[in-house]
Image 1 (cartoon, rainbow, N blue to C red):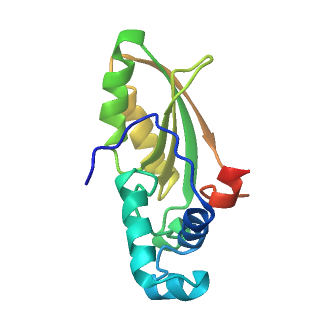
Image 2 (cartoon, rainbow, N blue to C red):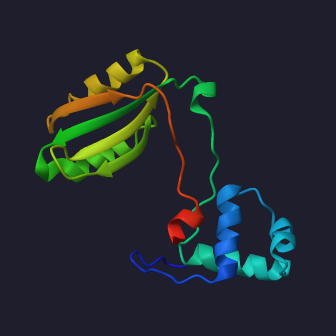
Length: 161
C-alpha cells in the first residue's frame, strides 16, 4: 500500500462521495452492487476504491458487533491523570488492552480518556486497580454509562456537510 500523507486533505468528486456513502452504510456492498447502484463500470468502482485506499481515505473495513450479546454489559468512560513526561508511554501501554475501545489524549483536568467495555463491575474494578499500580498514574475518575443513547461512526454525508 502507498505511504499515507498524514495531514493531507483531499477533494473528492461526486462518484467518490457516493462510493464512500454506500460503503459507510455497509462495507459488505460488492463491486457489482456499487456498479449497478452508481451506473458505472465495475472496473471504475474498483479503481476508485483502490485510489481511496491508497490515499488513506478508506482506512479499513469493519464490522459492527452488539457487545451486550457477547456479554459486555458495562461501558465505562475513564479519565486518567498521568505524570506529564510519561503520558505517551502510558497511552501505548493501555491502548493494547482489549477492553479499551477508544483512547484520547485530551485537554483539561485530565490527560487521557478511555472508553471501555467489561462483562461486569468486577472486571472493571480489577482493570482500574491494575492501572492504579502504574506509578505514573496519579488518579482516575470513572463514569459508568447507564444506557447507550447513540454509538456510531460519522457517515460520509455528515463528514462533507
